[in-house]
Length: 346
Image (cartoon, rainbow, N blue to C red; front, side, top):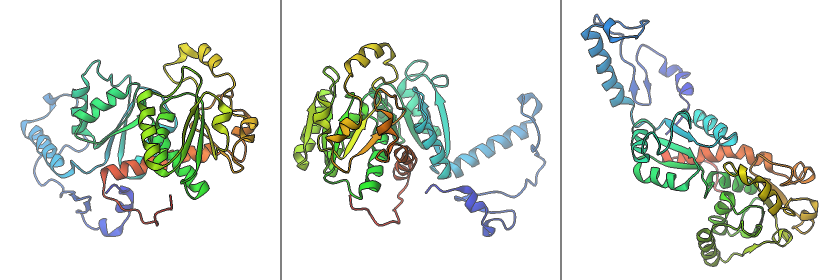
């Protein structure tokens, strides 16, 4: 299981003598032979004897044997910039005692300089899991197929599952239960809405979604969502009327109207989304206990200040919960950890 190495090192039982055990890795005694490399530079192998090079190779094999498969390395691929996804993942994985490695488009070009298959296999040999924030869902599908380690969707054009986990934890904390809640989506038929459609009914939540004409959710996602709603006895309403979607809703939800990669469509989108701003007028037709969610970053045209900064807005607890839910994802995919708290009533 992942854990913070410093806690172990601060334990007096592990500090006695030259030898101590850290995750089954025993530090050896100081070298008793003539090979002493501590404090030297490595600029060229010309400066090293055959015995010194043999020692480094011997040590490499030893480290590989003792440390590999310890579940402490996370590759992070970011084709799109991020605040919450990067910060929550890096700080969360570090708290668990792991080492996150951040890779931008300047460091890695998926399917360009190297095939996705080769990238997946290289990452599998050096990391224990990969979180990828990409443009195309198909790239994630290929990585998952070719990799031998868990692949986590940090956002794609089709889904954003880790955001929805944070949303649900926030609602669970606020309402004490998710079953029976009505979620009112007002905005684009995008990856956030798709992820809600793939999961809300499984908790017994109803979904009422309003999108402008031409910006409806993906047809294949809609078909699955209709099936989930039927299986779980929940309501699924898809409309072009924001007030119809907000009517009786416990949770008003929106997101950016212009995602990364859609900048050229800005003028067209702003025109199409006229009337979709969430305001107190929207809230008047919602349930009396209504709350508001937005995954951030937020633009004023999407929701006005009166709603966004109101006591009913849960956007900042929602942002914090990105950290705790991504930590839960990583721990659950890499370990057999069992929670100590009593299971909530969902």
